[in-house]
Length: 97
Image (cartoon, rainbow, N blue to C red; front, side, top):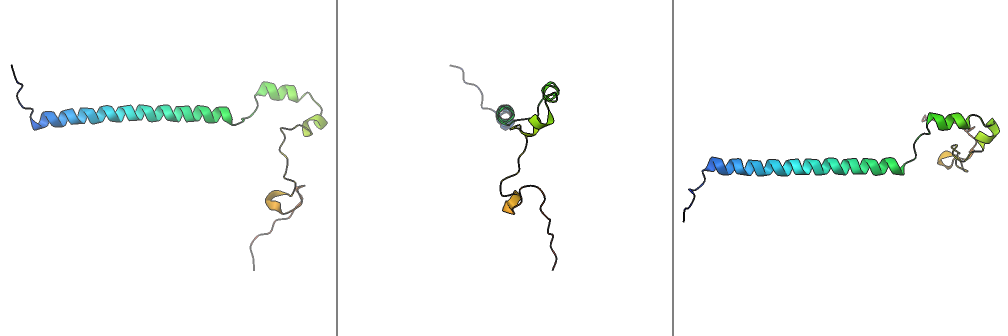
């Protein structure tokens, strides 16, 4: 039976570096895939803006119909930060002594 000669230190180092390089590339590809998957899921789950064709068809309706639409932003009943008002006519207070 023929036995191979013992490997030199340089050959062992090169073999280890190739193994580390292959693991690194595999993990980089895995991370890129997970980022793409997360981006795809986020894009599908959050509502975006309407397209130009959809907004053109909605512009044919009367202004009264648009203001009562459920996709229009509404202020909270107690106003922002529960300061009351809710109609947007509140006042701003800045620091001071």
